[in-house]
Image (cartoon, rainbow, N blue to C red):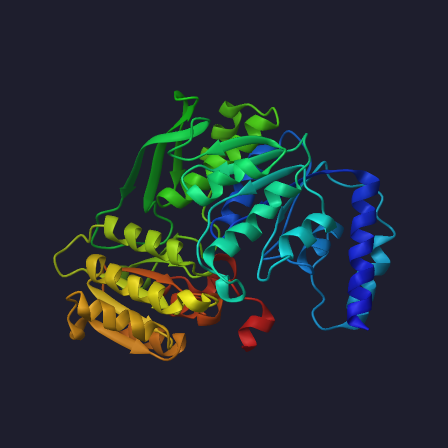
Length: 430
């Protein structure tokens, strides 16, 4: 019954798009989709009406819900029937629809392109996350490239020039190609700078960091981004992608930069600095974990300089899921990197045992490493262990539930629903 209703809802979503003909901007990639989506919405919202995909609505269930302006009714058949019923009363629609396209299995991207044909595609970057059901990283890249291939000849594809597997997708599309990134000859950046607080104590409401960069078009400076409480390359790339989309759609680059400087902020669980207990600082990156994103986050941890000699950089990392054949090697590489950047390693989950061993192999003392089976255990330990001036970086796949560590450590736990991921009622029960 539910499958039938879901098919009917997908058909209604197609019919709505056919009727109102909005510009569909689809974003795919292994990393940075949500931040890129939010940045694009910021630069377009004053020029046109925009609807943005909510939460992680990036599959055959979430995409039609976004199109219809609905939220998931969960397991309720009556709720899904209500979604279907209300779809017949839609009388108006936004000019632009910004969607995320996820891919867990071969064929997912093509199916989503058929459901919601995009005129603009953005491909953010690739990592081995979600590789479990793909024969190789090349097969995963081929899946993501379907977005570029599905675009029409009058469409626009926006590619990450710093990822060679993404940049090569320019050969596989009929659409106009635009690029962004350090290596781009189109929209690029230079002089990326991260200013961090060197302090003995971090308090709620303070400015913890600024990421600054010069924005270039065709290698000429056109402006400067100063992103408050944003950390490094990942948010910078999200904003560059948004500027590229804005420019391609005729929105002023100067306006886009102004809006991003004024309003862009980290999404919950994406390199979001949060004041912690006892004057500590949490870098909350707990939403999910691709290997490349975890390495990037550890590099951010290294940039922070503890204010006093006794202050520590703490890496609290949960297992990375859906890596298939790459799981052991990716966790091993994480352990090597932790040994280079962190003073303390808090490992969570079975797969992180591999990272623990490689961290020891790289010279990290066993007294500086603790392993826990669950995030709850790790959170309780850190609650006692953390001290003033410590900087705690947290990340792990969704199944690791590392937001529970953050909730245990945050200075304002009553703001958890606002600041953290997975705070809904169903998540709280699990």
